[in-house]
Each structure stands twice: as C-alpha cells, then as structure tokens.
Image (cartoon, rainbow, N blue to C red):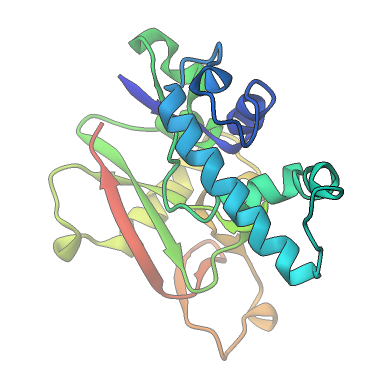
Length: 215
C-alpha cells in the first residue's frame, strides 16, 4: 500500500538527495521514494526558493550561487513549500504492518478510536489553525456509508469529541487533530461563524474543504 510522507519524513529525504542536481542518481534514497518523484518535488522547491529570494532582493550570480542555498534551503522554507500541497506529493510503498510507522501520527491516534464501518474525514475551515507555515487538514470520525450531503457533521464532531475525551486526550491534542477548542461565552468571537459542538467546545469558522477516507 502507498503511504504519504509527512513533513518530517520529507526533511529526512532532503538530507539524502543532492538539491538541484541534473543526475537522477542523486535523488536515490533509502526511504523508498521514487527518485523521479523526489526530483520533481525538489525541482519545484528550488523554483519556490527562487521566488523567496526575489522577495528578499537577493541577487543570484556565479559568486553568490552557493550562498543562495545556504541562506534559503532551510527547514522553514521546505515546510512552507510542502504545505502548499493539499496532500503530500511524495509517497512510498509499505507493507500493511509497516503503515503506522509512516502515517501521520494524528491519523494513527484517531484511527485507534474508529468503530466498525467508520472512516476519517479531512477538512479545513475558514479559521483552521496554521501549523508549520501551512494549514493542517483536520480530522473527524464519520460513518463510511453516508454521503457528505446527508452527513450530520455536528453530530460527527460531537461523537468524535466524546471518544477523544473518554480516551484521555487533552485539549491541546483535541485542538491539534480536530481544530475544536473549549471556550467560554466571553471568548466566543461574535464576528466569526462557529459550529457549536458540546461541553463548551466549538469548531471555529465555516467549512472550506471536506473529503472522506474509507477505512
């Protein structure tokens, strides 16, 4: 099965390839990522760095070329490039029993709460929290056999919240995975649309993107 690489795995991959190389052998790695896919991703990353340096007014020439990569090839810029993709553009083939090693830790955690005939829905809202220079897709448990137009989203959020609380999740982890946060009436921003969940928790904002994954 194919597993998408998260940003930390992409950083590890970066340390194993030769950036801006014309030789495909320089994109070979011990992580199982196809060299051609790695080349395409990192060529795009180099183009992105060129846009960043233009904003800074950095002038590239023969004498400054090496300094260009020293200055701009950073974890922060790699994260920013990675999070421009709605889904990870890099993946590897793994055995079923290796899946959890490479999965997004949030997916592993929420998957442990799944019941029979349930899956994980991924979504963004107008108020989605920003992680590592990009919006992180948030997650909620949903039934596999109900289409989005018939789905009780508020009910799914409430059910997921209760499962997380029962499993001992703290507010920080609940917020990181789902975007739901606990607020008082005084803390609610009347100018922002919110989805009221339960027990004082809300999901700030309105839905922008939604996709379900059957498991």
